[in-house]
Image (cartoon, rainbow, N blue to C red):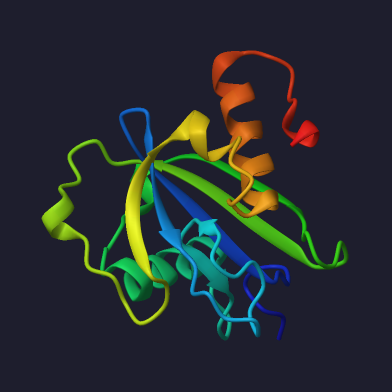
Length: 151
C-alpha cells in the first residue's frame, strides 16, 4: 500500500496579518542550522502526514496556534535547500484577525514577533531559503517577475 502523499521532507508556513509576517527567532545553538536567525513556523514531516498537516502541527507546537486549511492562500512545492532531492512545501496563510494573546511560544526558539514582510525577505539574519520563498510569493502576488533567486 502506498502512502497517501508523495514523499517530502518538511513544510513551512508564513502567517500574514496585514503586511506583517509571524516569525520566530531560532535558538542560538551551534548544533542547529541557522542559529539565531529569524525563521517561519514549520519543520519535518512525521509519519504519513500531508504537507499541510506537517505545517499545521509545527505551528501548533511552536506557537500554540491551530490553523484551518481554508486560510491558505498560496502553496508551492520545490526542492529542499540543503538536499535538492528532498521535496519541501511552502504555504502562505492570511490571518488578519489573529491577536497577539492567542500566540504562545513553545519549546523551540527564543521569541516570536511580527515583522514587515518586505523586511523579512531582505534581512541577512533570516533563513535564506525562506527569504527566497516568501519573496517568490510576493512576486506572484504583486505581478512582477520572481526575483527570489537574487536573495
